Image 1 (cartoon, rainbow, N blue to C red):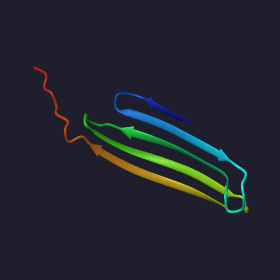
Image 2 (tube, helix red, strand yellow; image 1 turned 90 degrees about the vertical axis):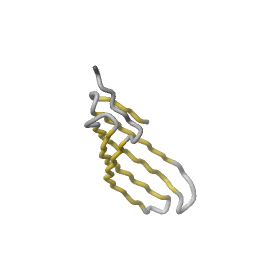
Image 3 (cartoon, one colour; image 1 turned 180 degrees about the horizontal axis):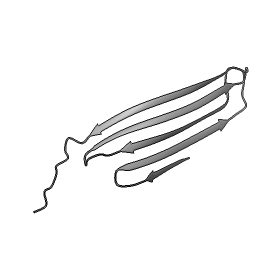
Image 4 (spheres, one colour; image 1 turned 120 degrees about the vertical axis):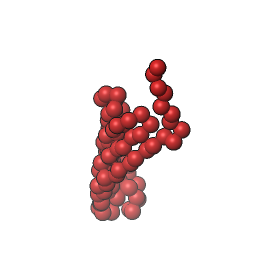
Length: 87
């Protein structure tokens, strides 16, 4: 499940979540979930920078489990962008 929202012409926010629950043999995933949120900022046309936080957990049938936290940064520049002047 995911939701994206454009806060303004310069900001965009996205939220995502997924969950899984199954029953199987040992060493097989019993349950897992992850969620993330990101913010993308476009200071000028053709350029954007973003920050994302992700959290995930997994449990297997033999009672082992683990978790992950991740912070990710991105930058994008559109090399084909051309500014148009208003006359």
